[in-house]
Length: 263
Ligand SMILES: NC(=O)c1ccc[n+]([C@@H]2O[C@H](COP(=O)([O-])OP(=O)(O)OC[C@H]3O[C@@H](n4cnc5c(N)ncnc54)[C@H](O)[C@@H]3O)[C@@H](O)[C@H]2O)c1
Image (cartoon, rainbow, N blue to C red; front, side, top):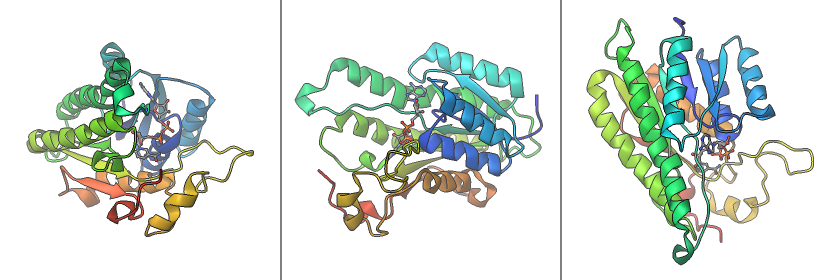
């Protein structure tokens, strides 16, 4: 049990989720690091959170499994007795021409990318509402990670795009229904974000191999880094955003303003 604020970031062993976890730790949250694969990256993320003086709880759970999600929330309740922030970040994807989309890929992506955030949000909202906070207007905040694919088509992105568009509608319904309970719900739509794990034999973070066609059509003339998304999430869950709900913040360097998708 803790009196400190607690945040769960799904899929946070690496990439954007990791950056959000570290930024929320910087802002004073204890963090539940979740992933379906717990490896050295997950342990390093936890160590980096603890190095900031915050608690890190590493919990394996598969966002595609309702049983696994239920167990995840039971463990959070047992350990912390509260949850203040949920970031639905974990996602999976595969790319196929429309006529070649395997049915199992449809099921997997809809389960992990859309049903998982729905189930996590339900469980998180119940924990938040049960929280005996003095201020009934501030029970918690939920962030759903969408994508620029929510509103623009790329080749082979049918199922991923559907999930990321669905996440937006989920955000709006949740904001509408949970607002009166003191829970704000917003989405972030990242553009091109270099979420690789740094490696000495690869280009530095921010300069991925796909950058060449993307940077010239991005008004801010660079590829995003995970910290760009993390700072947006930190703002949206903070009291500075206390009158913002049901919105999607696009964080893409201006790409959607008119960039031609790279082929
Ligand atoms: N990187 C980009 O350019 C970009 C752009 C738009 C949106 N996004 C979104 O940002 C989020 C994070 O993406 P990223 O680029 O950091 O990817 P990533 O692959 O680096 O991280 C995703 C994490 O989710 C975990 N994960 C995958 N399936 C899971 C499951 N079933 N259960 C639990 N964890 C699971 C992975 O193990 C991984 O740690 C995703 O929602 C993605 O759709 C990314």
